[in-house]
Image (cartoon, rainbow, N blue to C red; front, top):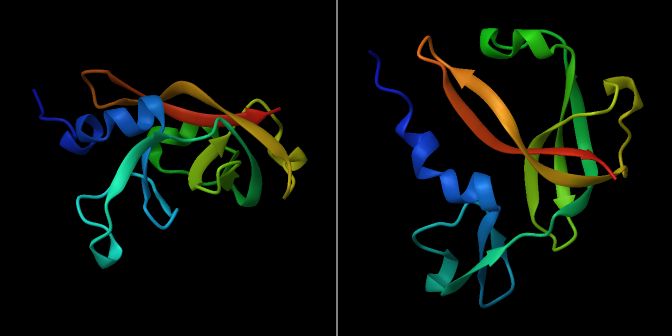
Length: 128
């Protein structure tokens, strides 16, 4: 039996609940950090569930673990609170994805890791 990615388990709160941190100056950090610029303090927040596509690309030749999804759109999404995330854009033909398109964040299966079949969940975005 192989040991699987500890990073996946470390980042569970961020992926499952979109938890971020907002500093005293109003900057949002996702995922949250241990230390912030200038020694600022940060409060945990839950990021917005809606946003827009800032930029995107269509992946035609993906890594082996995502080969069954090709082609798929991958984009940078600016949420309504100003935070930016990278996410797969699903439930839409990649040819129909446009910059400025409104999207909603949803909790989805990301992949199955390894031969043991560890199911990895997280967020993806869908058109509003």
